[in-house]
Length: 240
Ligand SMILES: [Zn+2]
Ligand SMILES: [Zn+2]
Image (tube, rainbow, N blue to C red; front, side, top):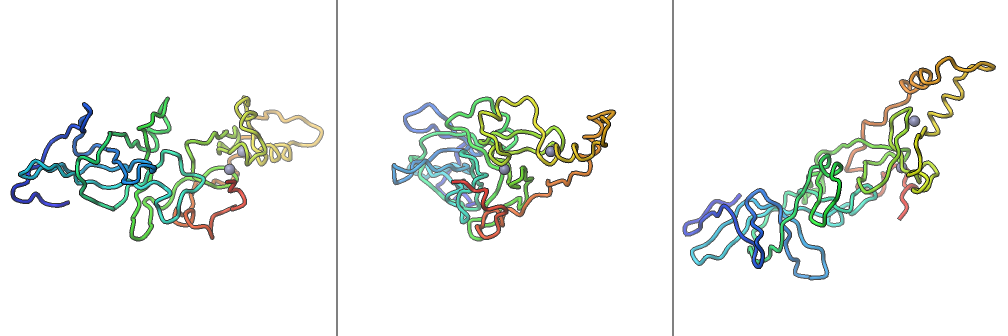
């Protein structure tokens, strides 16, 4: 972070021109891009500074949209996903046109309504190397993809893994009507284990027994490999 130079003064807050919205260091703001066709830029305000002529400069740390990262947007990226970059900048306060909220991934998934100014961030992004932190996340479904909070998923009552309806041969509409779901692995395994000519004493217990043997897939894929085309698992699953 830049030090305050002589004649410059740090401000605690700034009121966005033409609005009553006030932002402070630590807040997230929307900045008008030079090309008005583009989406606004999102930045984290680190410091607000006024010079002796009362020109207000804002020290920011940029959020990148997935399409601005070296690997581009992938299927598991949410529409409101941002990466906190290591790209710092100083901008005129005039370019700020609004405030927004960048939620943690967990808090975002709990939002009842996602407003236009709600975003989420689960990765930090190094602009120079294209590296992500954390470099591993939990993966789900047969396609072994990180969770995209925009996508509907159904949970298997057996193995507790989550599945995309399309990956298990269902439509979204069918998935929404489901009361119970057992993935094909769990249902075929519980059938196979059933002794011939006799009903299981406790189908529930049997299912639990099997599921303890079910391989856990929660170790996660390296995010760097998820972001490069060559090593994406089950690439055929990508439907664009
Ligand atoms: Zn899937
Ligand atoms: Zn299952």
